[in-house]
Amino acid sequence: MRWMSAAGRGLLVLVVLLTGYAASGAQAGQARDDGGRGPLTLATAGDLTGYLGPLLEGWNRTHPGERVTLVELPDSADETRAQMATDLRAGGRGRFDVLNIDVNWTSEFAAAGWIRPLPRDRFDLDAFLRPVVGTATYDGRLYAVPYVTNAGLLLYRKDVLAAEGVPPPRTWAELERYAKTLAPKHGLDGYAGQFLPYEGLTVNAAEAVYSAGGTILGDEGARVTVDSAAAREGIGFLARGVRDGWIPKAALAYKEEESKQAFQDGRLLFLRNWPYAYVAASAEGSRVAGKVGAVPLPGPDGPGTSVLGGSNLAVSSHARHPGTAARLIAYLTSEPVQRQVLTRGALPPVRAALYDDPGLIRAYPYLPTLRESVLRAAPRPKSPHYDQVSLVVQAAVQDAMTGRQTPEAGVRRLARELAAISGR
Image (cartoon, rainbow, N blue to C red; front, side, top):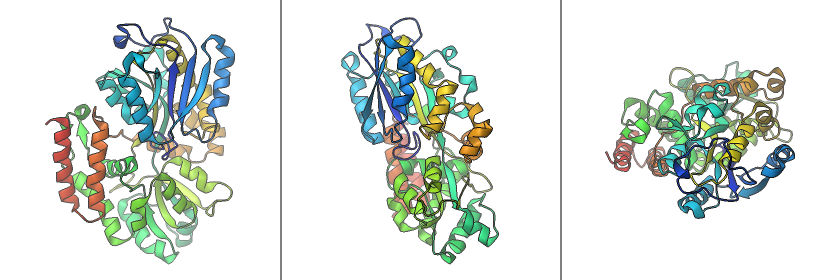
């Protein structure tokens, strides 16, 4: 789950399972550190680096009466969300008490009454990268605390661009020109993202619309704003790439992992992906190790806008131990632990100071670029019906990219279907 994080898996989903459930009336309360302490069970999806168990040992050593037991959930974001939703609908009979949710689930879970508001003064939000806090709010209230962030980057073959004497592209026109002319010259495909109809396509489509200056929804999902020249330009850019061949047709079946592998195997000149793909492509054994660069995503006239990925920690409305839940969230978002989230888990932290640390920059050269991308990034469309929103975006954009519908017709259709979802 990389948009939660980083790729179908990178984005870590944590669910803290407490051993009991809130008394009547707890749903309206806030998770303050005012009692309700006890042991926790922490479940994670896609902890591929195995960093979380050792990290939680530190908590368990200093909180013997509030020990955390680690449990892993399914690796798929869709499966994880489905399990969370089923459990939360069970109310006091459910198991899940604290959840680390994909950033775009915050509005949906808050609107459904599944997670409780949190007190802003309990958490050091001013130390976080500014845009990430917005992913944790709904209707003006804080419903979660950012834990991991992410932003899309443009990976490129720096050896190829150096041989041609050109800098990495800053605009769509430069990206298109290099993908059309330089890639074939070096036996490469031009450009790919995540274009299979799933959440990754929603992310890529939103980035194209945002980079062109457009939006998809406004007012927490109550207003449809996608029917615009900017949206037509953004979706048209992606559709034109497939039509003209500088986006290979194979990319229409790519998720994060498939696109990463194509780049890592030396088949692509450019790739939009999360930072984990930079790490993998630069690692020993990669065919392009030492040949990879990363810059912010391009836009029509300069750097574009990425979608914010990552995950947020939230507390179930039926949690029995809100005091422990709040204390654990504060621990997981503290600077020492956030440093380990990066160094042990290879996941982008939410604390701004870590992106200026010289030692971390030497170890992770992409950090300044990632920081720039996060600061320019925007959340996916906020909506209490986000799962439906994502599905109609995927369908309309896929039809535009495969030529079954023009980008103009696709945007009009998208506006109609989004209006039906929002009840407008």
